[in-house]
Structures are given as C-alpha cells and as structure tokens.
Image 1 (cartoon, rainbow, N blue to C red):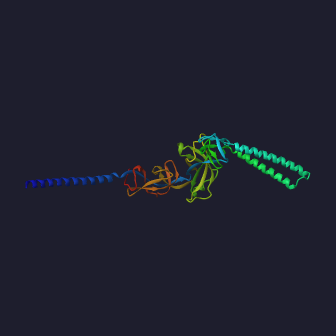
Image 2 (cartoon, rainbow, N blue to C red):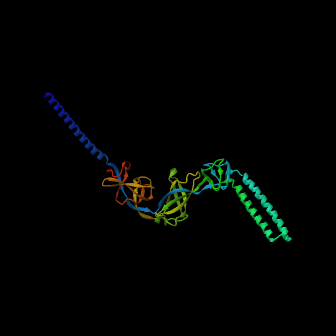
Image 3 (cartoon, rainbow, N blue to C red):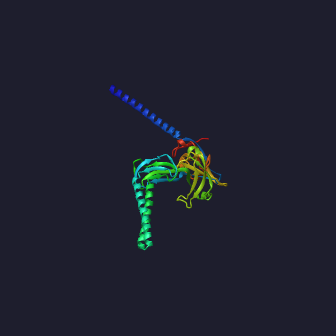
Length: 351
C-alpha cells in the first residue's frame, strides 16, 4: 500500500513539473512572437513627390551603335592560303585580309584573255572581207557578238581572280573571325565581322511632346554611363516620322568617339536636350529610386506598411527625378532604409 502511495506522489510531482514547463514554454513563445512583430518594424525616412518648376530640358537614354558595321562574306571558291588580320586587329579600307589559292582563277583569266584577243583578230579579218563583199553581213555581226561575249568573259575572269584577294570594305576593328588558314571557301561563306567605332550613333526614344522640341542638326551633350560618365558632343541626325506602339519616337544622335575609342557599341548612354523654357513637374528625391533609372521602382508607405511600386521617370537631375507615372502627389515614399524592406512589412518613421 505504501508503495502505491509513493508511486502516485511521484506521478503527481512529475505532472506538476511538466505542466509548469509547458506553461513557461507557451509564455516564452508568445513573448518571442511579440518581440518578432516589434522587430519587423523597419526604421525608414520618408519623403513625398512635390510639384515644382522644371525647365523643359530633358534627357533620353539608349545604346550606342556603330555607324558602320558589316559581316564580310566570301565572293569566291578556294582554299585559304594566308590570313593577315585577326580578331581585335584594326584595319583600313582596302587593306588585304585574306589570300585565297588562285591557280584556277589565274588559268581561267589567261584563257579568257587569249579568247578575247583571238576574237578581236577574227573581227578585224571579217571587216576586211566585208569591205570586199567576201562575207555576208550576218557573218560580220557574229564576229562582233563573239568579241562582246569574250570581253564579258574576260571581265568576269578578272573579277574572279581579284576576289581571291579579300580586302577590307571599310575601316574599323575586326570583332569576329570565322575562318582559318586551310579553310575552304564557297561564295557566301562568313569571313569577318568588322565594326567601325570611330563614330557611333546613340538611338534614343522620346515622347510626343519632346519630339517637337528637337531639330535635325541640333547639338546635344551625350554622357556614357561607363568610363566615368565622360561627356561627348553629339548631333541629331535623324528623327522618327512615326511613333512606335508605345507612342515613342526614335531619335538618332551621331557621336564622334574619343582618340582611343573609349566608347564601344552596345554601351549605355544618356543624351541631354537643352530647352530654354520651364514647366510644372512632379519631382522626387533621386535616392528614393530603387533599381536603375531604366527600370525604376519606389517603396510607398500606406498604413505604416511598405509596398513596392513601379514608376515611370522623365528628366533626371543630380538629386531629383521627374516622376511621370506610379506616384501621386502627397503619397509617402521611402527615401532611405529600403535595403531591409519587403512587400507589406511594417515600418516606423525616423524623424
């Protein structure tokens, strides 16, 4: 009997300990949850878009493209004997790039020259005979036709023989090389990609209101994003006559490269179009922009919670951005502290 009582007492004590431990665990979990909720409130500083006066000068972004570029194709058949220029080399227009085996072409040229000379002599004899009425007029015409035909064959043979010496059609830099010594060519075989970056064109898109402020021949300042934001002088060379599906107009700006060709095709650039007039614009602190100017977003705060939102920007100054779409005047926007934000997270405002 005593043993049973002892066992019951031990069981009761163990139950009490387990209950206490479980209650403490629940209290700790609840406290941790409260602490977690409090810790999720990210401190941020806020700003808001404001309407202000901005001059009508505007910027437009695009990519640099070469004024001249081409894919050089073979115009002859034969095996490559020599390759004189390779990828990365600078070439001048008319400079020899490849020498193709020309034994067959040289033999065809010699044959064509001999046939043409013979046809000319035959024609002279026919003319002498025709003067004495020894041949018919038709025979004389056939002799003339033979001269014309052999002359055409000679021109073609010279062209074919010349095509075994492949020269550069334009000056520039060899961007890609598709052949090697010993390669066998057919007409149309790719040889080189040649790009001339001495002058480039920056292709940008502008709105319908902006395109009316641009003229062909207008001088603009162009800034390359890479290479320390170096500035270049540009000239507007073409303006689109029709808008694209997004109601944007193409504008082409020609830019002279620096002496060491710092600019490269495909680099990103910004053109600044100066306009001596002012307009109303909605401006936002530039540091509020998340991501790049090409794909911008902002964090908007509503009911103390942050939400990411895509925006469309216009003119970009040193410390402000013109907001065209995505934010309304008076809306609270995160200016700093965006790095720790996520959609719908609680935020607190720093003074």
